[in-house]
Image 1 (cartoon, rainbow over the protein chains, first blue to last red):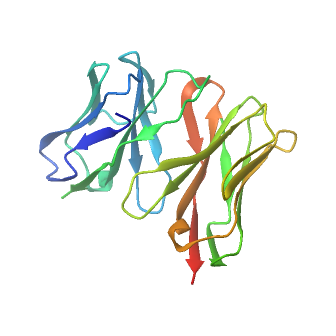
Image 2 (cartoon, rainbow over the protein chains, first blue to last red; image 1 turned 120 degrees about the vertical axis):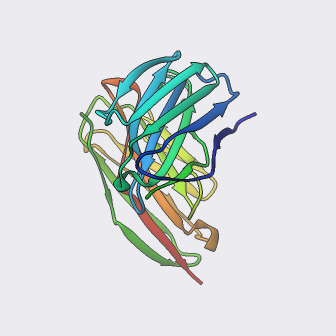
Length: 115
Length: 113
């Protein structure tokens, strides 16, 4: 299985809602990532988990809260978002180190709209 | 930290012609350079990558060259086809973190029939 899956595909939420994005991979990768991508822009790194521990937080606002419950799952909890947070949220996974073949495999993304 | 610049931002070529996209990076310690293709509404997908110990790599119609001295790398697509139309992102590893790659701003490639 060489696929990263994400749910839901689309999400519309109000600024007072609490929602979660989910990501799953079964490639045995021990690094997992959350990216945010605005239209016509490159993916922007938000968080990196390495061996289920948060290793990189790119100064993301606390209204985004990541969680890695096990080596296959990655969640992104959303609370009190702003309209400017509307974007495509991509999950990715890879081997931990960029030593060997370390391609980052991306999921299809969740298209988030904040009203 | 690493900074990656990519040019051009848009590129239109006649079907069958070649396309070249260029990127520069700032950190001489970066050692991994992937290229991703993202079709409209789809996820980014790796099309080719190169490590700093290699100067050139080819996979069918796609090739990447790396000049470590000048800190630039390029993507070459030959015999372009309509399905090559997409946004292409170059990227470079961040030497401070084994897991982090920095993306260029992207090139929207259009293939004219």
